[in-house]
Every structure is written in structure tokens, then in C-alpha cells.
Amino acid sequence: MEYSQDLCNVEGDGDARKPTACTSSTSPCSSGGSGYRLFGRQASVHQCMGGGQAADILLWKRRNVSLGIIAVATVAWLLFERSGLSFLSICSDVLLILIVLLFLHANYAVFRDRQLQTLPELVLSEEMVNNAAASFRVKINNVLLMAHDITLGKDFRLFSKVVVCVWLLSVVGSFFSFFTIAYIGTIIFITVPALYSKYEERVDRYCGMIHRQFSKHYKIVDESVISRLPRSLTKDKDA
Image 1: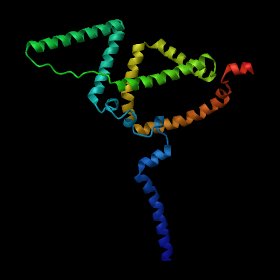
Image 2: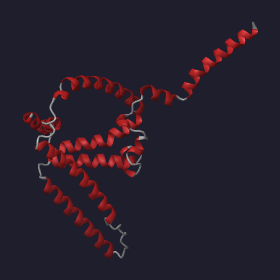
Image 3: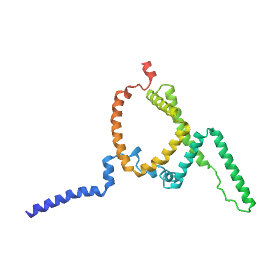
């Protein structure tokens, strides 16, 4: 009798250990339950952004710099949108004021026998230029390849997607100017990553739910509409 009670205690303890083991490691169990991370990332948000100074600014780890970017973007947007001046005029005026101030500061320091602060040399290395050119070349070639396929009618699905995207850009451009869109993009780019890093678990959970629902509806649309679209109209005509 005592032996059977011991077995029941062992089984009860074994069952009790299971939820405690899961609760002790909350993040693996919760992440395994949802199994979804935004953009399919495997590393942290800071690492996905490069892990450098730019990531620190976007995640508001250097708060003063982040606030300065928002302030400069707001002032620039007000100048371009409310002043009525053209982009070239404002850029020329800002550059003129900057050059005059630097020239006067340098001559004032010489007049007061003060030593000028050494400015860092702005030099582009050959390796940096080559890497940028190689990356730019790959992207341009991909765009040209897409344009080639669309022009020759090789991919009707790609043609329809490009038409929809360009039409959406035209609709957005009819409501907002270029500087307003650039300002909104800057504000989003400087605030959304920090908010996502702060509420990462909640955002991933809700985005996972939305992604599953969207995948179901997209599968229905793909099977009923998109999959029936011909890849090439020329092949159908030849057939």
C-alpha cells in the first residue's frame, strides 16, 4: 500500500515538474508557441541593423542624436513646405551661410592668435568605393532584368505587380508632396524600430496572427486568380 502511494507521489511530482520547467524558461516556450518573428529574423533587432552606431541611433540608445535627427528633419520639412522657396535656393542659402561662418571663424581665430581645431580629413577609401559600386551594380542589374522581362512580356504576373505598385505610388503622390513623404519616412524610420524593440514580444505575437490569416486568404486568391494568370502572353499566342 505504501509502495503504491509512493508511485503516485512520483508520478505527481513528475507531472508537476513539467509546467515548472516550461514556466522557468518563459521565452523558449512562448516563442515556440507562436513560432513567428517579424521578417523571419533570427538575431536581435540591434544585430539585424548592423550593431553599429546607426543601430544605436535608430534604437534610441543615443537619445540626443535621435532627437537631433527628428528636430533637423522637422525644420527642413517646414522650410521646404512652408517657406515657398525651391529646393535649390534653400540648399544654396544654407551652404552659403555655412561657408561664411566657417571662414569668419577661421580668420577670427588667426586674429586672436588661437589655434584652430583640427578637422578630420574626409577621404573615401578605394575599398569603400568598390564595395558600394559592386552593391549598386547588382541592384541596377536586377532592376534592368525585371524591366527587360516586363518589356518583352515574359512575365505577366510581374507586370501586374509593378503596375499596381506604380499606381499606388501615384495615388500617394497626389495627396502628399515629395518632401512630406520623405519627412514621414524619416520619422517612421527613426521611431518604429525603437518601439518594436520595446514591445517586441507583443508585436511578434499579433503579427503572427495577422500573417496566418493573410496567408490563408492569399492562398485562396493565388489558387483562384493568380495561378491562372499566364506567365507570358506571347507563348499563349504562339500556342
